[in-house]
Image 1 (cartoon, helix red, strand yellow):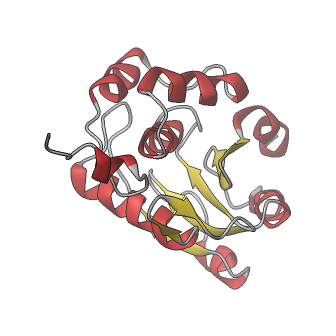
Image 2 (cartoon, rainbow, N blue to C red):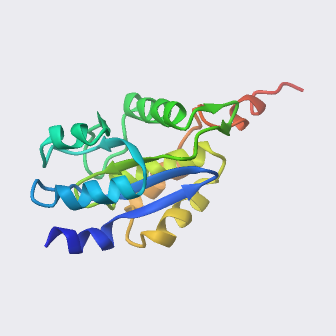
Length: 176
């Protein structure tokens, strides 16, 4: 039963007012339960990182904007996907100069199992918000203990800041 599974593979990650609902991929039969969960958490945007497993029309009719950001399971996201993800976060949470101005909403992100690509993107956001990579991993694993593979953690530890979400992006370029 997909709705029972959902309780163990989805979680809400909140950081400085930004909210991310990490989920596994719903199938069409479980979609009504997922829609309830998204509405409960005030999800305005849904990011899909895997192949389609449901009818998108039902999500769009619920007022949720869908963003396809598909990349290979177990792989790091291509730079193009990372930038698209960060720009979406900046837009949804109305981030200006590293300050989140809209906190009454959430972004849902799902991959097939809800343990790899989705938490990876959320960790990238947390790093951009100012957490060190290992802190971001621990922050997500506190709520989703089986999240991220060794390779994904290694990628995060080498991740280079885009500077899209934090004030640190500007400060890091100071010349003395």
